[in-house]
Image 1: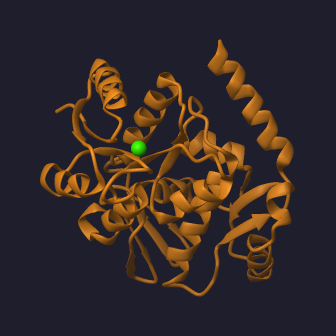
Image 2: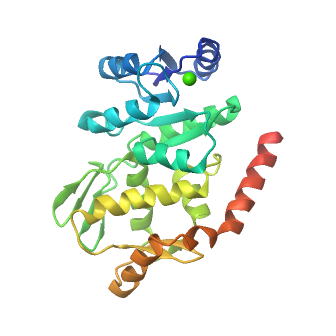
Length: 266
Ligand code: CA
């Protein structure tokens, strides 16, 4: 069955354009023109991915996102937020509300399609039947696609699951945001390095509701690692709250952006 994409957008001309391009890519497309209609269709049709405009009549995209994430059955539904807002704080707010990724209007169609492809790929169950990965009290079951800590079930979104899986496959190794983006999001897609921080924060939060030891270490100017050294973990807590943490890898962010733009223009 072809993946079903729900386009939530009130600009009819843009809906038409998105439908044309998504169908050309081989997806089935349904549409909603306001936030309330979107909720109804999501409940009834269970799309595989939602392209969600932020500015919508009746109910905003952010509110749709919030309501979707409140429903346990919809927690894994990939949401790509489409926003005219370029403010960094708005982007982070979108991600914190539960969007998996965002794209800013005006966007290029190839970039949007690449993101849709990457998100659908991430939401597929990975490596079925490959057994389990264990790190201290954390067990990641690849075949059942579930994670427990100290025997208690932890619910992770698709991106957090892939992040944790990648860390658990390489315990103790430090990865830059760039490396994590390549490994988890895929090399063909541009995501701002800060997106990694948001997902790491989400992963930390859910992992730490069950265990008291923060096993994700923030390595200043380098990136992140799965680490069980309590002393380092205490540093990690301090680092994760530090504003200078982001500026420390600014050169990476710049390189990534430049590389992407040149690819996009080619
Ligand atoms: Ca709109």
